[in-house]
Length: 376
Ligand SMILES: Nc1ncnc2c1ncn2[C@@H]1O[C@H](COP(=O)(O)OP(=O)(O)OP(=O)(O)O)[C@@H](O)[C@H]1O
Image 1 (spheres, protein in one colour):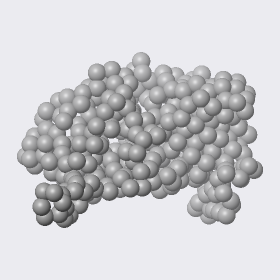
Image 2: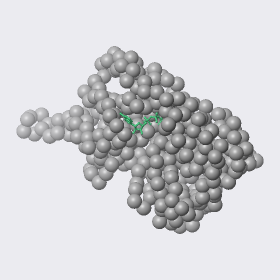
Image 3: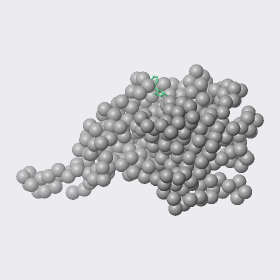
Image 4: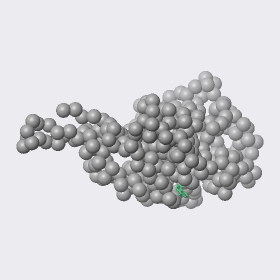
């Protein structure tokens, strides 16, 4: 009897978002990815996104039968005669998903899977699947791929074939009436407004962010709010050019904040990825696989300081500028005096005013949530 963690019989799921980036996903699927799967004799099941939200609802509705089929494909029998035979199910299994899309598509899959298994016995200590992503960079920012140094579609396919994965850690985002997970970035202020306005420039590809950023720097605003950190933090120290630990012993559930930034914020990003697009590395110490969130906060500055910061984000040296705060944290709360907008992996979330509207960001250590890996 042997229990195998992967099955060659079970298809790789291929999620294709034809709308991502410059809409080249279908072409790259046909010319690069499908031929590679065929050459490797790997069966696949294609799921093509037909609208915003389609991928999330696909996984909410289908993840349970998919995991059932996967577990069955790995089950073995024990005993020598038919009467004594019992089916032995595996305790783990690897579900492989190739994504032809950007970060928003990965976000939809992660949230669809976790919603679909919530409150069920499909992910427990006795059966815990691993979801392995191969992200073929066909979005606009492609932050996950860029942060892992994936250069192009062929590079991503090569890494999939090589088979090495690393954990893809998630942040949980909780408000009074919503709860979801982020894989790349939560932002407030100028970054969020830029992503919001960039949709009208989608035809420009990567340049859509630059166009929208220029528009928002010209009409620079300050965004009221305070940011409280709970538990241990590491804060970038300019004098020593290193991250220094603060409050290592403190638990994230302590009621007193370790640190509070009073705002108002010009620019605020809370990320798990170092780069948000090629040539833009706002959080250079962020790691896809560690248990920290990286925060870049710029409070109450003018156009000159923001332009100076943008001038250094390609190399990550902006962390040495006086007005830039860089902190690694485990649990963070954002509270604003009036209703505000957050950008959550490219989607938008409105949060309420005052303590009731507070939003909490956390890197959870729950192994039944942190089930995602990525080919690297
Ligand atoms: N068939 C479709 N038509 C229109 N929009 C779609 C379709 N399928 C998915 N979407 C939406 O496309 C949006 C963009 O997806 P995605 O994040 O993959 O690409 P991107 O924004 O170009 O890249 P990135 O997030 O890496 O910057 C998401 O909001 C998703 O919900």
